[in-house]
Image (cartoon, rainbow, N blue to C red; front, top):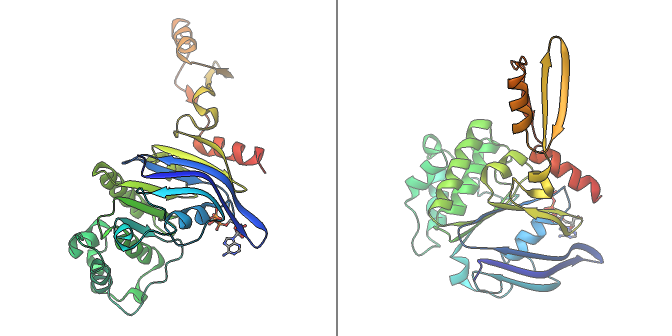
Length: 278
Ligand SMILES: Nc1ncnc2c1ncn2[C@@H]1O[C@H](COP(=O)(O)OP(=O)(O)OP(=O)(O)O)[C@@H](O)[C@H]1O
C-alpha cells in the first residue's frame, strides 16, 4: 500500500475551486515534490493530507487512514513543516524542540535534532532573536523530532542561505535513506531536482505533468543543443543524441575548446508547462 493515495481530490473555498480532482500515489521511502505557481493549490493539498483542512470531495489515504478523521496515533507518525509556522518566540531553541519531543512516543534526542538542522550554536538562544532562516530551521527541527514515517515540507528552505540549503538537502537525503517518505513543495527548481525521486506540477488546481526530474514534460526526449566555434565561426546544432555529431567533429579535427552540450533545464521545462496551462 502506498503511503499517500489520493483519488479525485477536490477543495472548494466559497465557490472557488482551488483543487479540482487530483490523483497522487507516493510509495514508502519516496521523496515527492509538488511544484506550481502561487495559488496553484499546493498548500491546500498538503494541508488536507496533513489533516489540517477538510476536503470537499474525492478520496485520501495517508499511512492507511483518512487524514480527515485520523487520531493521535496517526498524527505521531507524521511530521509537518508548515509554510508559515508561528513559533513560540519566548522559548529557547532547546526548550522548543524539547517541548515538541514530548508529544512523540520515540523522539530523536533533542541535541541531535538541533545539530541536524545546524543550530547547535544557537541552542540557548530565544527563538525571537533568530534570523528568518534560522527560525525556519527550527520549524524543520520540530518536523523531524518525532522520527516521522512521513514528513510534509511546505516550502521548507524559504529564507535559507545557499550553504544552509545544501545542508538541508543532505538532511533530507539522509532521512530518505532511513526510509522516511517525504512530500515537499518548493519554488526552487534546483531543490526539486536535487531531492525528488518524482514530481508533479500543479497549475490551477490540476496536475498538468508528473514524472522524474529527468523525464518531466518530455524533458528526457527533448534532445541536446551542441555548440562550438571553429575558425571564428559559431556553429549550433540541435540533435537527439550528441554522440554521433561529436564523433564526426573529432574525426574532422574540429577545434572543440569551446564545445558545449546543453539540454533544457528543469526550470525551462517547468516554465513551458506552466505557460501552456495558464
Ligand atoms: N483559507 C482560504 N480561504 C479562501 N481561499 C483560499 C484559502 N486558502 C487558499 N485559498 C485559495 O486557494 C487557491 C490555492 O491556494 P494554495 O495556498 O493552496 O496555493 P499554493 O499553490 O500553495 O500557493 P503558494 O505557492 O503561493 O504557496 C488560491 O487561489 C488561494 O487564494
